Figure 1 (spheres, helix red, strand yellow):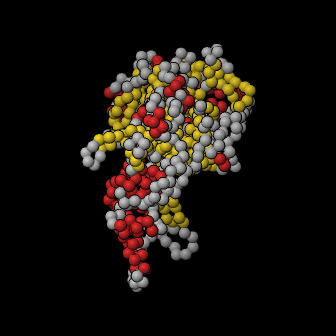
Figure 2 (figure 1 turned 135 degrees about the vertical axis):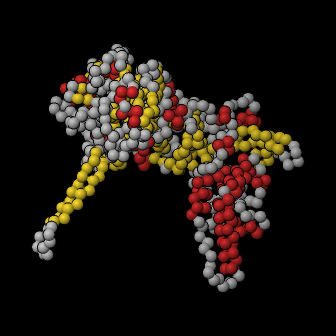
Figure 3 (figure 1 turned 120 degrees about the vertical axis):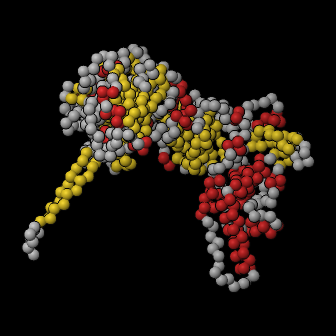
Length: 626
């Protein structure tokens, strides 16, 4: 059965902020050169002035600016104790503008606002010209001037939020300081790994059993020394905000979370096979992964034959087939005891041939290479002088294509899973890769140009025959689950020994992952070089998230604390301070004061330290072989 743990994440360094070298705006630089000595001129100095602008995102973000969001867009898991966050690829982005006018501080100009479905404002696409004309709409928005590179016909997205609601969910000026930080990965020696990433955290918990919508909004110049400037708006007035990014998710079912989906996967049976039947003869084949399929004979007759995919239930010792062959019919196996054909290897060979012919460039290149190779051999055998000997080296494109084919790339899904009952919704199935099936597939592809007996003989003698399986033992699994679509950045590790949760992981036992690919929106295939006995499925470090702990007995939130090295300590914040408890909006500034009292009495508690305290580990689900 699968077991659940929390992985030890890659070491992460949290940084309070990353100020850009230059703020956005127009600049002028003057260079002056003075000449002393030499020839005297009327003007002994030279001066040149250049103007340039530093641009920064203001009214929209490019898709490449966004690294990840959490909870994932469209997810249905249990996230009611999670503070949503967004990760930005440019670490300086949250500090490239100012939220407080004419005040050079470290407050970010970006914030996340979470709305319940019934509160969510409608998004509007307007132009900068419309936004500038503040008297043409009833919502409150401050005057502003366009900067270099901005035009009145540029489009942007805005939301109009009721002032009474916004006042409850908006971070205070003090809160903003703690809701943005920079994340940087490091190795065990403290060496930086990867890029610096900026993180913006929300100050509100999602609604349980409901849908939430999150907006990344611009707060440029919207604060003064007293807080957010509502411009004299009444409770029922609207405040206009620029939305740079939005996504939604639902807190519906604990079983729809990452952990819930994986721990509740269908694992019976654990291999790719049809359900059991009472017929002993049929069950013998079904237990090996066979399915009965219609078979139309050459004379027009109809019957059914057994077929199994390359994903079989156990290691296949069958080596009674000699390759290469001339036609697929040579691989049809007849069982005289029951009068039924086995067309598995015949289908594999014919499929390989069709896949090769499907690519004109490949089939022509393969044929030309084989012909050139054969002519070269004939010249050597007849001792003929060879001038301008053609290059018989195998083209890299052909080698790579066969290498990919040996890992089933390009093989249609119905050849892998011939019946949907073998891979139900929300299931995982483990398998061995049938090396003989793969060799038949490769030989079918390599048979291009194999027509005569001499062609067949030459392929037999060709020392560069590509129809050779380079991976004698390959195992893997197919996963069909919403985890695949909801968490596209899954990480998978396989080990060749049983590793229980109370055992440390021996990295030497990790098996090479040959292929990991989504075959459809919710189907994932993983192939390992060797026999897997333990599989870990976990999330990328980006899905480290922020949140509170839940006391199920007292029905209250609390927060376990860590020391400055990130190690859990026997301290916690019992009473979470709320800015609005009904709306589940946390008073971030007061929370930092309570954490500071417990773990650090210095006066320099920063957003980086808050991130360290609020971070939750990456979830991992482990499947252990029996």
